[in-house]
Length: 122
Image (cartoon, rainbow, N blue to C red; front, side, top):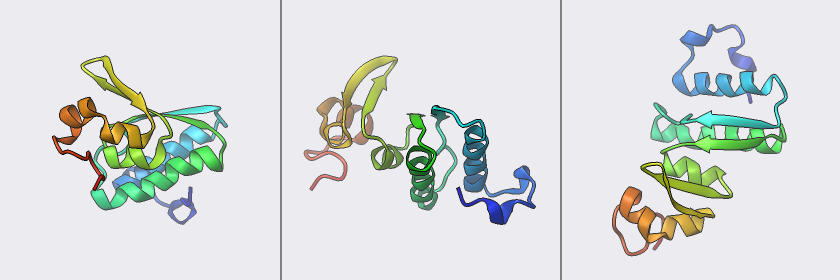
């Protein structure tokens, strides 16, 4: 996960994005089959999200672990998830691939704002 340059730093002194990566690295130390990430983008700046998306991809591709991602950051979700299960007030609102979710009328109305083409549409 490209943390070797930070090996001499204490965890509390790391920038937030690097601290989030460290948490993922600690989880991977046990060689899990699955990693649960609970709102890992919370507190990340918009510019940090693509780098964290690379971390999630590395969990899947390099470490060959599945990922269960609980997240509100839609940009991160659509960058890393093959299948998305959207909840609203504890109930299933929609299930599908990123393109389906991006255009699902109930998801657009509840989370993305009302547009005719959804987020990222044209």
